[in-house]
Length: 560
Image (cartoon, rainbow, N blue to C red; front, side, top):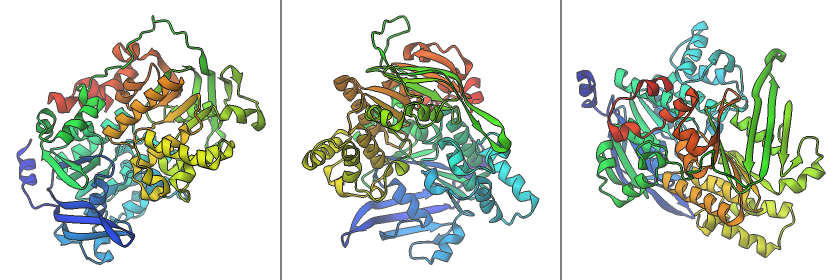
């Protein structure tokens, strides 16, 4: 640590929260979400706020930037931003602090981005707030997009959010936050949708801003490995209260609270010190008697880009999912994972190659002939906001597939809805809630429950646990394994989190730029990778720096 950084961290806090209490108005009563919370963040400091879904992390962050929902109430305490008290302040005063003093990287890119505007226009709006005008705006837009890790930024500026992958959209949000050059950046789950190499590059950049320029960073995350790797100070929250606070090494080595110990034990990357420990030890030499439920055979997919140019999303890709087994697909954002899922679901037609479900060729089948098959495979989306109808209660969302396929009586459907909530560790009181009354993690669990309602043979999972805190993530993974064992389910599991993949998958394919670069048993691919791109993904897994306290290797630096 340099002397200048040390001095910076002892300066006046950019943000100072004192005895904050806040909650949400429900039925005429304020239900407290944050209790007597105090925090000071100084220039040049990285603070991580860690806790499970519903612990009060996001409520604290939104109170800090004046973006609480209409039914939220601050019932006590003080929040000073840049020396200005914002509790009770006029909206004009709070607005003047956003962007220039405090920038926010929101959790969900589909909510944070305007679907009707090109991304270049949205980033330019933040750039102009700094007084930049003319041709310099475009140059600055490209610069911040590149800084946020968006490759080929000049090709993306004219695209709309729906034309980008989930990871690319998240990087646009990061660029918008950086564009205002704030004194403090609040990063609310900033890398939950990113693959490990891009995640490392983004966090490296945010960390370098802190170390070199004195900008402060407040990371809101359920990923204890990310927090421990990056933060100077980790604050653990539970049910709106601080249960533990300290340096990452202290908390990881000797956590004082049982709750913190449970979080560490549930985090795959931390539990093994960043080393991948596959659950299934079989290798390519082991025999498998499982017939294929899904075969993607030599599939190529081309899209027509601007000016009629062909864009190859997948190139001669073959993937096989055996019945009752889990095959994982991993790769960086934009590698073709989501396109592969859409082709497997029959939502896209391959340019070349074949897709077979239980031996039946899917291409060319009419809707009437496909419908009986569609009951047998279901999709869990990456984004629970997009997966759930905001007008439907949880109960209505869960029984909708049953109604569509005319399964069960009304009473049986309602009973099934309750069973599904039990399975994904949600209380039955959630049945009559709307999606916007649930946390992000709770919404994702409802989406998983909905996919299981028809008891399918195959479930396609698109980053299904990326929005969940580690303890609930562990519950969901254990649930998926249990269901697989009991009912013979097969999973096509797409994820950027290799530690999660190691816990659930039997086999894996590594995608890069639309091509399979390595495929095989988990124990073979993760234990002895043959391709440098696989090595790069493994080297970027968070949790290693926190445990070892060492500098990253050259390979780790290259991956970032």
